[in-house]
Image (cartoon, rainbow, N blue to C red; front, top):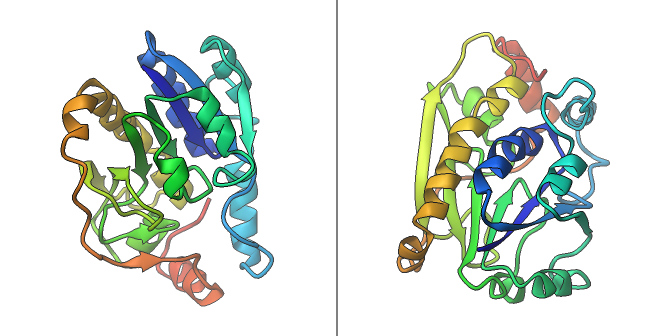
Amino acid sequence: MRIGLFYNRDIYAHAALNQLVPKLIGHELGMFYSQRVGGSSSKRDPRLMALAAVETDFTSAPGLSFDALARASHCREIAITDINNEDRDVLREFNADLVISIRFGQIFKAEAIALPRIGIINLHSGLLPEYKGVMASFWSLLNNEPILGTTLHWITDKHIDSGALISTRSQSVTLGETYRNQVLSLYRPGVSQICEAVDQIHSLAEHKGGDLPAGSYYSFPTSADIDRFLENGWRLF
């Protein structure tokens, strides 16, 4: 299959792709990363900006660089500024059978969703439908949930974290661990979900018409939310 990997250049996607790419040998891969992630960050708490700096610091990250992963996959990384407008032709020209989204920072809309022959699957670093939106693990910890997890689902419309469920994985919260490391620990089981789905993708594609329940949507935490998070004994990094 021709598989397009769409991701954000952060430590989490880096960890995921280092595990995933070697397991997709035999498929023709393309690697596409989001030039921008979400809207303006100017009004976010400075502690979130510090976290973002940590999440994009690869100086001590184990594994191959994104560029080296692309070379190993016999392709090159392509930057995506707007997948729904000027860069939609990039996806069309790649002629993907399947797109796998891992932390990709843009919302796929109808015309882009229709391009891959089989469809688009997304790995969300939270348990759906309870934790739609951003920083699902942060909100899970703040809400004193005993487990964290990942959800693999189809992207069938522009609504965030909707589409038919494929699979979930959950694990116990590690007391005393940072938010950063809790999230990193989700991607080994998450990659297993993706590999299992790729192996069964044609069968799964026959049942992607349903949708997840409404659930709850979370945005970026406010300063008050971060204060409560720290007061409860958690650390961002």
